[in-house]
Image (tube, rainbow, N blue to C red; front, side):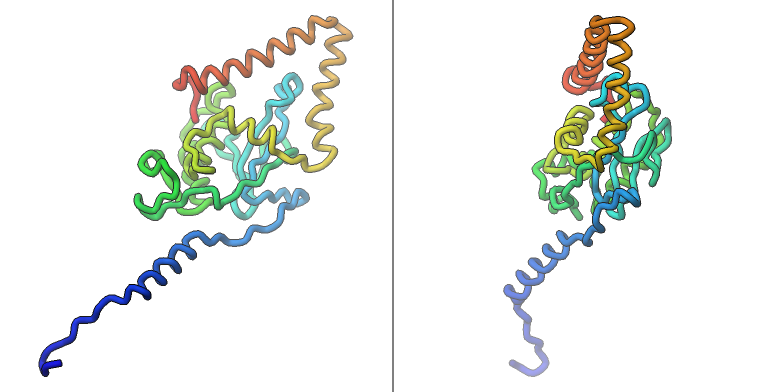
Length: 243
């Protein structure tokens, strides 16, 4: 090397690759979750469900749903401009389903999306952590009017899951949120099953005793109308419902 000149340092490719790999591994690490504790009403990263007064007495597959932060605190859209925190509206949790944070997309930039809908996800709104996504959806629904038929608790959950791009999907809506908790949910205990179905059984028995079998036909028609409304608004006239 000649005096007065500086040597040019060549980049160390091996070191760069190691640094990138280390960064990627750190990016996808998650803090360990506490165990689910129904006694303390803590359900980390879970969807939670409880029956609705009157509505669930007539259609027990319909209920109130919320989503939980990483510390197990519940969030649920319980009224106009109001997201309930740490106190699930309409009663304690009867059924829950824990979600996997590794199925979420937490991009730090547009190029860091691991989902296939990177541009759509960025337009919708992204999150860098589970709790960040839930907080963004909470702020959004604090300016929404509640309506049982068009913008309800299921709409809030769908918004959270779309913001997280959970399971690589940006198509979460009232129907598949309800189906997820209905078919994959776990009962908290036997009493949860009783309080979810006993009012329905009592109503059916009283209805048959007082009206007869036509009561069952009316009840079935009501259930079909409700399901038909949400299917129509979700898949046919998408402007009807908020997701």
